[in-house]
Length: 579
Image (tube, rainbow, N blue to C red):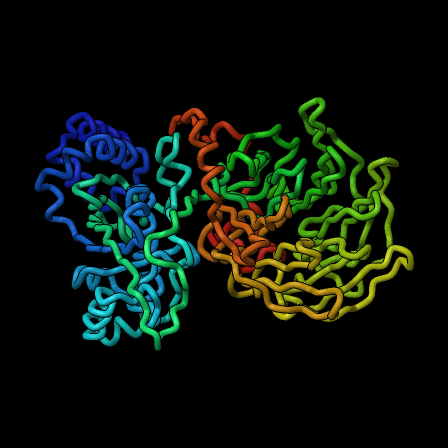
């Protein structure tokens, strides 16, 4: 039937019109034909101004949303696509977290505000007495209380408004053609301004075609009475809005990849996407908030690590999807290629790697059968591998980093159990000693030194991907809970560039991730947004076409799907898809 299906699709595409495109886009099961959907969505996007004026959208489900703004200047800066995507993200959170069902969205108009974590929140969660808790908001709260069940659930997360108005501008809409990077079931197809501060969008909600009707409303904070203590002392509409844009995404979803600081940029190598090991390498440049491709590795690698030594990058071990690797290769940018290096003493994946005092340490790992105690060092100058003292506990998927002239091996897995134990290696004594355990047992976490503390980021507890972090303070010799990431990330990699601790890729528990976020040293918050100046740098770049921005699987050398091993566990979606 493939030929028949293709002919029918071509016929429909040839006869697309403003009158019938929405009806065709609503066909059941249409999402299975991605190329067909992409062509229809492209037509709708180009002609949405005319479509929005027709009656074709009236038959669709409509969610009505009002978004509060703190000043008219802030309202004038709002980017319609950014706004629509934030609203779409809010709806997705409500439905997936069971706060609302899709049908109840049409029962009323929801009033939202921009919270301190750059997400939209329902105004029913604004605390009483807040400077933004105006009469308009109070009336909305009273209306929301009529539905006790809904209002109770909506108050699970109460975040105050920012001390200054913040306008979010996604970099994808600045100079670049818009690309549908959300999940197909939760996607913004097109949007249009239909009035002063009014917008209409065509979206998919849980896979169903729907519309969003969004209205910006001015919410001038009321002057507090002498008995009130406002949460912020900002006079109404006196400060200018801060402008933000979103961090650019990687070109590929990556899990169990290599990552490090290379010349004050974030270098990302290999890993798994949805179905295969990768050879590709890309580099994130913070100054321009952009990614660029670097020479691909000689071998496809997942469950491996990289080590940056001066201007050289070493990719060590891992898995090619079939077997564990003992091979090592080095990126030499002076010749723009990866060079084969001496192999490790033993083939392994999911080991920990770090650099200390001119040596690259390779700690533990998985040999295809058991977790290893074996540890080795590689001398970039001598080009030799040397075996050192073994771990007390064989472990793989452990977080490994050098801190205060010692090597820390944190958590990981011994068989099927996540570990909270920590071991410390002293190179002068050539011995591993058991240290204070971490707060939460985890494997596949990222570990890095940031702000003179040793941070442990994300991972999996064996059942769920984690967004939690913790850090070790050498002065107090204790582990403390740190700020949580915006997204759970197992098999995540982290690196420090400038005053930011980046978390790159990983697995959310449902999806491989192509996103990054960072811990801001000033605010001590994880965020996916950067200040306006970087956005302006992006705007000066030439737009890239949608066709060229997509990676074709046929262009890459394919590798086998990784075989199920104890090293993956339930958080590895490759295994879940193949089972």
